Length: 459
Image (tube, rainbow, N blue to C red; front, side, top):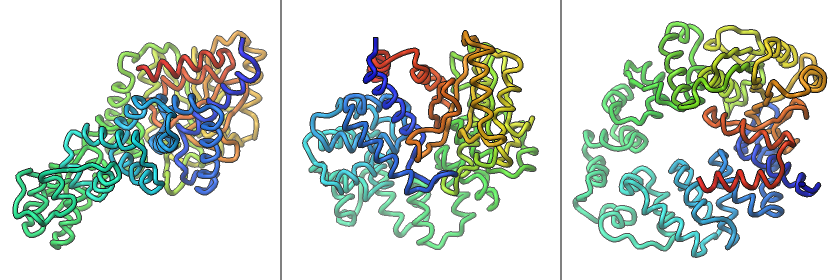
């Protein structure tokens, strides 16, 4: 049996996991950026100081890159903490810009022990094309090489530290970069962000540049440039169905209502295809599912995380539709067309939960930032009565997914102690987060949580 101390430890670790999944230290609808950073910094210090092994183990969870980088930086700063293989595995999952930023922060903080140098060396050695990185992230690669005390011989070393010392490079991308300084045609074979700088230097107009560079854009660059390129008369031919669900949902929500109507078949088809890919073998296996989806005004997020909570709700709607055998989505605004979702109005979560429970589904998923205000507290009361009076046996599984970190509470905002709450950032993580949320119900304890983290790390 778990002791009181074990229960506190379990709660603390789950609290930190929720923060590490949702918070990026940026401004939210109800919290300034400074508050977010201070709150998150405290949680990192508290968890690392009190539960160092579990702090490191959270790298195996679906936390965001911002917090993964903070954890890795803190672990490397204290020799002997953390599994080097788990750190290396997490680095391999992070985006290259985020990893290079971490290496720069380690250099700034003077973290330069043998393990740190070995991790940088091995990560750089594992890059599929370090010459490409040297062109696209030139200053960051130089900084990492210097910090790890690496000696690069041959063309790559010359390119980083004396780029014009050679009259010609044998490595194609390095030679293309050299030629792009005087040959306009060469720049179109460079990565988009590098080519963009050369185009400005050569005075090439935006439409001409976009038309020529379009075939070499990455899938995310195609999506990001779809609207601006379209205004210039250039089609990027973005493969929407191949995009991550929340990113695709954010793109859909950025479109004007009439554009969404005109492109309905294309957009809905892409969202359902992306959801089917995320569901995989689990498609149709969840039985009867209902969802309450928050599209109130606070789902707008903030200027730096524009419409992020609403995008998570829209993405979860299509993923749950794919996972469920029978599905019903209930939007807070009572909107019946998910494609036309927009952040507006109050948050009558309690009333919508009643609507969703009316059909007694096998599972109810609530996707909301937890600010229930029409009237305040009704959702908590509805859930209390349902759990204690109408469904004491828990026949209907209820879980609250919250995409927003509450800096004041050091956690995601909870609707009720009667139902578990888990932070969510990417819809693809929803099945794993529903599994993680069971630890918050108190039905399982610290030993099970440790075993779960160990299993995730082993996998």
